[in-house]
Image (cartoon, rainbow, N blue to C red; front, side, top):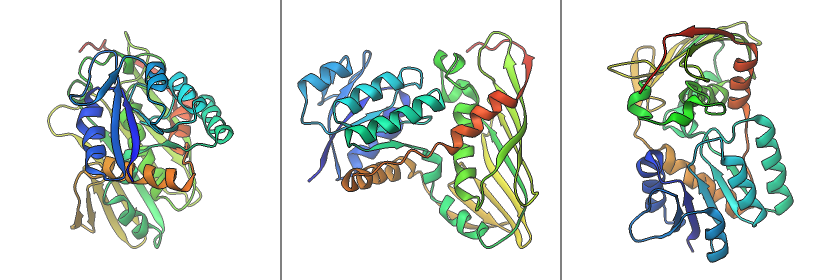
Length: 307
């Protein structure tokens, strides 16, 4: 029997990814949506999460596709009402919030899932398996996209808790922490802030690691033309390139796999599995690197940014 789910937040990511993934998965039955500004034709609509919880006690799972700043309050309300919760990335605006939510889920006997959609791209497991049999020598992340294209007019990303360029950059870090056979930590960073914004528009990171590999990441939100979501790897036994955010894998210059955009479909399949098993998944390793970047990073200023 399909599990009843409600989607909170009906913005671009909800319409582009969440709704199609829910509709395509027989494990889920969309019952209602929550949004102050938009609805989905044919489904119950509520302006607030409290209204939904009062009226639809039969719904067991809440998926939150809202900005990180209000997410703690929404999640806490749902967990205390005994609902399973699926969190769009990043799972919160601070690590302390996320730890508190994980404890809250345990106390209420429900599942919570901190989703990292890029980890669920088709070629990520293949790269992880390939790298597990080799010694890493060099890793370069190049994650550059156009904020005006992907986040048009979304002012929340420039506010504290919005993370700026780390909103997409954390996708790369989620892949990094998935494919590596060992933990790494940030050694230095530089963060470029528009003079009129509270979060960075670009960042350069370096990582310390147990095999002394050269590991760096470059994030930029000012990329025009083709978008870059690439991870280039050199090992003692050849090279690999993961591109298109994880949909394409090349080994030694040859394409070995070309996937499709299945990330959110895979996320909802994983959430169904967690709920059935009464389990949670709150891996916060990508977010730790972001928090370390804000802690260790040298702040630099650049020209003002306007949409």
